[in-house]
Image (cartoon, rainbow, N blue to C red; front, side):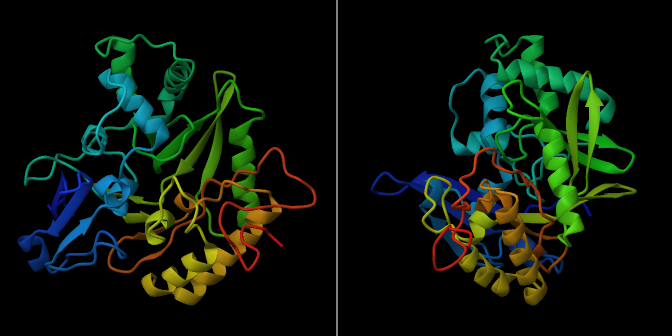
Amino acid sequence: MSAVTAGKFVLTKNTRGDALGRYVYGRSYLENPHAVEIDPVELRLSARTYETVRLNGVFGALRDAGPDTWGRRVIEKRTGQARLGELDYLLESPDDRAGALGFGLNKVPPAPRRKFNRTLDLEKLQRLADALVKDELPDDPEAPQVQDLLLLGTSMGGERPKAVVQDDDGLWVAKFNRADDRWNNTRVEHAMLRLARECGITTAESRVEPVGGKDVLLIKRFDREKTQKGYARSRMVSGLTILRADEASARNWSYVILVEELRRIVADARGDARELFRRVCFNALISNLDDHPRNHAVIAREKDWKLSPAYDLTPSPVVAQERRDLAMDCGDQGRYAN
């Protein structure tokens, strides 16, 4: 199915000078029999105009589709600007972003990206990522090495160096090791995903590719399905958006609240609640203290939402033996896993 324009987002300021975001679904989109909501929490399918002053005026579902720490670093280096506005980050992001949303300044949707890096390009991508991490790239945004940053992409979340690559089976997120890693992160994360599957947890498919004496972790994208005409996309909304929470404050980070919200959103509430509980237990057992809400998500290919496969399962290198705290509240004793 080809892209359609779902609605219009406007970012302005209110009378107090605070960022104010407004979103409205397009009339033609609402009349489309295949129309679906882009966010089951804040942006339900409706003719009303939605407003928010949270998150600098950017709705959670739009934030989820934008670049995270690594992607913003790539964009800033490529454009030669130290800091851009939230809309600029969305518009500067290529079409490899998580989920099904795209962004443009016109009513006509931007043309979808047709070409992706091949897995054969991993060694070049690793060198680019290393140079950016070490701040060894020139400051001139027109320099060939800086222009090559387009190959890395920008839109997959997280802080670690990564890129989207393609092989005959589909699209993969390539995650690279860093020189300052305390251990081989790619093999450790791959092992945790395999271990989780052995424990009955639904996880993203993964494999490790040795490249130039280093290991690269490939994680198959569960929000893209290869078809004869390209890639069918699934909508994707993070746990952070479901909780109406902010990355800067962990006040509303709670598995207890998350599972209650899931019951209102997903088609199989009982099954997804059981799956989430297994993941809480697994995170505690492997000392995954990075289980923040952006590392949980729901996806929808058509109308119904469901819990996404587990991803970003990484143990913490230093954990006290007598106490283990997760990133999110998991019971009456807060973050304490007991």
